[in-house]
Image 1 (spheres, rainbow, N blue to C red):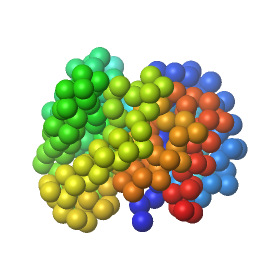
Image 2: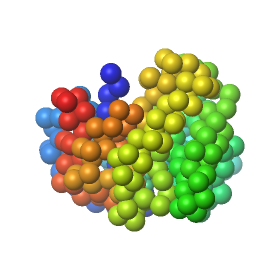
Image 3: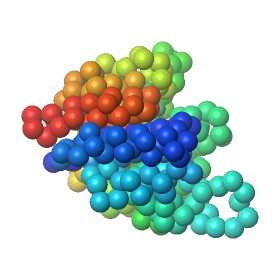
Length: 256
Ligand code: 13P
């Protein structure tokens, strides 16, 4: 049984002060939740403050990106060892906004995943097609390209511990959620691809999150799908009640 994982990607939102407020409320609202991994990913400068709040709670910390070198003359970057020292267990890698606005490619995603593993961080690897690609019937080709490019050179054991987030770009921040069937179809494809590239064990172990306009009122039908193990949440993670609602909706995966 794969443990459901709900992660909040706060993107470029919340000052350290606001981040502390949000996570303090969230901590109270999800304190009795068991059986679901809960992750928050604030802006880099809020990581240590948020870590102070979530330490010894059931909330874990993630970063939104990292650079592949550990240290040196790389102005403006964050590295695996630094993120790890700030309290992170997870790091989001290859988000479509980074591919779109910051020149992220399969190759740089691959290097960042290597750096994450070297620092003992669990990568949340983002893949997904744009609207034009979906309308051009290229969804599976794009997802295959993202997954194979990201995972190139990693061993079966390394891949088994990763999280992959399927985030169709057309569903991000648009209020347009993929239907449970649309999401399941791609998740099933990714799981099949993992079996083809590695083996059944890896395919059965990797946790697959759906991302794109996830809310408290659609999480249950999404996570009820056999290959959907959780969600990567943007907008709805910025309010403690809606994020807690999504976390609680995910318990249905455990209790049936
Ligand atoms: P929204 O939940 O705002 O659509 O964002 C999804 C996302 O990009 C999470 O990484």
